[in-house]
Length: 271
Image (cartoon, rainbow, N blue to C red; front, side):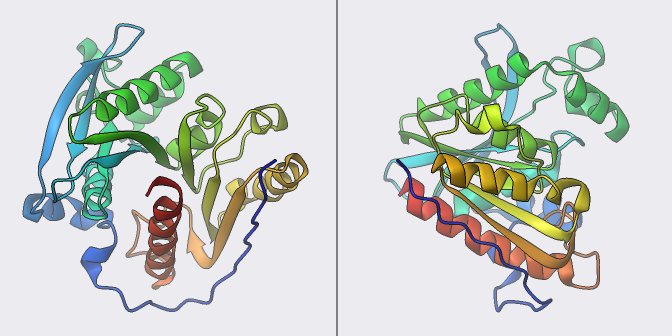
């Protein structure tokens, strides 16, 4: 039986002493951060088991040793520079990071996120079946773990819709090492019962729609003897990691604390 370590923290708005490039770029800086990255970033494509061609952004860490994999799942706005910059930052932390375009092939004319606007991306994202979602995350993880420089070990981190997806996806793979949920809703009890991997949830304090699902999940995970750690950041809103320039510094403070926690959790369960 796994031991629960439950962490409920409400932080005051303060800024940790971290340089700006020690956390993922905010949405407005993401494109330039990618352009300036010293790491190898590339676009790749691969087939899923359902026969779909999935496009993804792949970021390699510096160094020569084999590295574990982290899959980054975008939010309802689709596959943007921002989630690609998150992948690059994960590579800076020492992981092979892959960010699949979950809309691949589902847009007009068989396009992906680049074939729709933000509202169109959300419509396509929400039209995906759960079978398709799992198939695409599996394909990304398996592709990256098969790379010559990869270890056969992976975690998933998701944001907004991707966070909700990550929490539920954790019930699909017994070999998942960790799931990290950024401001995504928790799944129902029957899904929680199938989760084996440790879960970390990171939430803005001003995000009631999502946060009302946190405590019920925590109680159920405790009852089941599973690992679900979470933190709530006072004053921060939904999407704080991409919207670091909003809410008078609260989102930036939350981003810095959450990213430290993210790296700590990955180090514990992947390294």
